[in-house]
Image 1: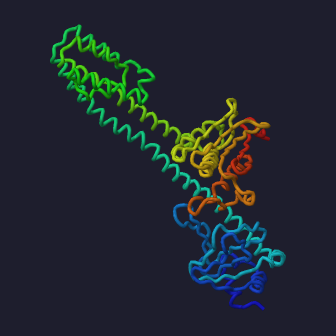
Image 2: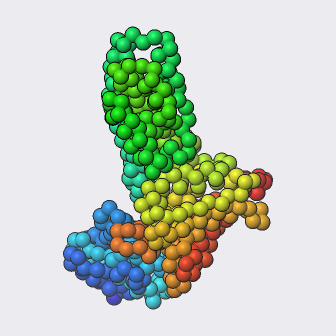
Image 3: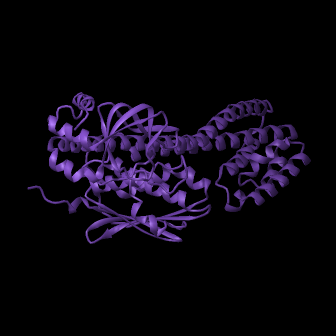
Length: 469
């Protein structure tokens, strides 16, 4: 005979209170009321729940550290039902289920589920709907959380990538102001020497030589150091400023040209002319450096725009796989350089487009390539290939890491399953990859052995889509 107090409490239960009284009585007869204190574990990580949890009072929580501290992913309060559910696949929880406050739970063992389904159809329907709603909510929230984590990683990498050219541009701009001032001072001094047309022509000849493209050997460190020493010695011997040696060494200027100039002008005019020419060389070099830095920043911004499809609606459209992979590798450039990983890309020249949401496909490439970079050792190798097989696009991400043990390969796409250390992996990346690929009518396969792990993604082409009815 069911406890009348328990029956009354079940009648007030938010999820099950509307069930027929006979079904609530069945739950009271076949369940066990248990009380848990703060911090008590109801279901442990990796162990499948063996009971249905009907929460009468309190608060149960599952938290996971996704790299930014403990994060709540599941919770059950008074009026909720959790744990094992009828018709569920019985997946193990990603972490311990813990009582955060004193909690009372009516526990119904899974061995009673066949009878529960038969005797309590209303309760069963309610539990199944709750399970579906929770799965839908989790699918949406974990995809959002993984995107936010990916965005955080991208932002950190992008900040590092942008910092180098931005800092270089700032340094060059500051030096440019100083160099322009030096050039102006040298020009005024040179103008005061009242040179003849022939002398001005001699100076222009040296200036034109400095502006000419440098030979390949002039840019090697050893050749540049030797040239700087030789020009510095020449300048000292002719009473000119030795500080001009470094800028002049970067050019095609020869000692013979300097000798011709020294023979054409006075010592004072020679020093002023070389200061003016040297300052001009520095200005041109700094201007080129600023242009290079700005171009790099522009390239990175375009890569971000391409990777995120920020100016596209999140709807399927023809997508260039090559551009997506290129933008992804640009975003991961810092990580590649930090580990000195060699990344080779082989994409068929005539590869057709996919019909997909571009930002979601890029999320697939990001997760797979990022995992590959984590898997390989320093100076390892990652290979990305894309081609056409049997009318479908096939993209492969291959790494020469230690491989995934055969015992866990079957679980690699499970939510929250990760081979990375604590706070280094969420266990969501490959699960999300699988779902995104399936959303695009594709498939993903794993082939792994020591020294070679391959993730193979198959997608329909733009022309391979089924015709509308």
